[in-house]
Image 1: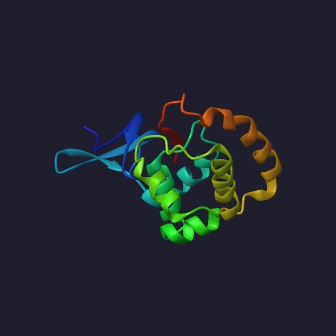
Image 2 (image 1 turned 30 degrees about the vertical axis):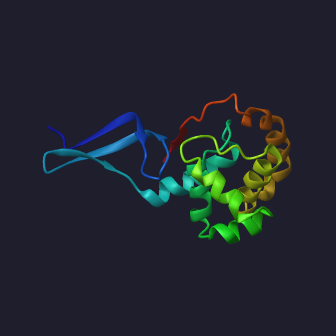
Length: 149
């Protein structure tokens, strides 16, 4: 019997919100199947995927962005030109949609791209983001990201 296996789609909650890992690897250790995951690699893939997520960000995803860039709530609020109480409110939504006003969410998603130095295609990204912003409304359910790592 092999001590390794893969699962086509695995629902991972290790970052505080659901992510579907494609081709997740497991290893048998002490009679139990344990996920073999590189949290840094997953985090890096998630931060690149969030700006183009087709639905509004959840409170947990907002918290992830803030902590990924190692910012306090106050500093994060300053970076986005909002109050720290707004950041508290968004993050308190946890697994639910954070209900960020669409123009602020566009700014937040743009902020991520710029912090990652991925602005070479920024103009096309921004135009697409404006078109997609209609999907940030309350009518769309929060859904897990699907990433390959």
